[in-house]
View 1 (tube, rainbow over the protein chains, first blue to last red):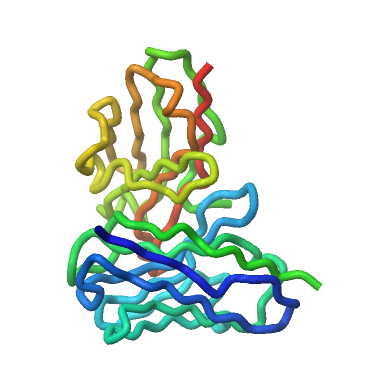
View 2: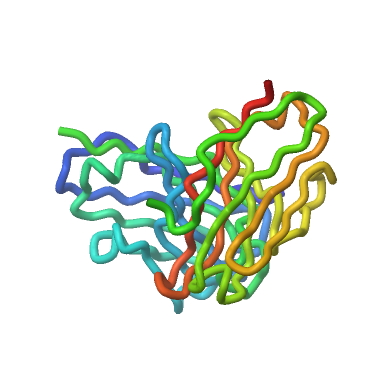
Length: 122
Length: 111
């Protein structure tokens, strides 16, 4: 079955960096576009970033543009989110989520990981 | 302020019907982009509930239905059950932002 497992979260100070990983299994990772979505404590879902199935197309929310990068290693079935210049407002649970349609872009998200908590605090 | 606007909360008694609205604009729903709905139970990851405006994934009861018209969309839940108590989010693509957008979420309380 499809499984997405995030890791790499933790407590960091403002201005520092963190890299999240999302390990995928149960499907052909290289054929699906993936998103990062975050949720601040007690708040709603907030889209963060998108990477196409082959890594050729990447998009970011304005709130993280220039600070976050998204990448994938299809040989390792792993997605990454490199987060630099972290701010208190980046504190959230970060989910990776798979699109439902292979070789597609901007489709619905049919599989989600359990999330990893990032806390930015001094 | 979310690009897609949802009511913060709705409520209904068991067995009743409730609807949750999601209002967009010309750069998302009005441009023809589809709406998707997610259910998030307390302490869990979101789950896809409705995709492409009105389609249910396998396993989702037919008590849940979705529709979209113009710049608005809605999720309807009939025969409310206690286990439907959750947060519900709409989602679409926005061409002005070149990215995905979520509604602010609606908390459903089953009275």
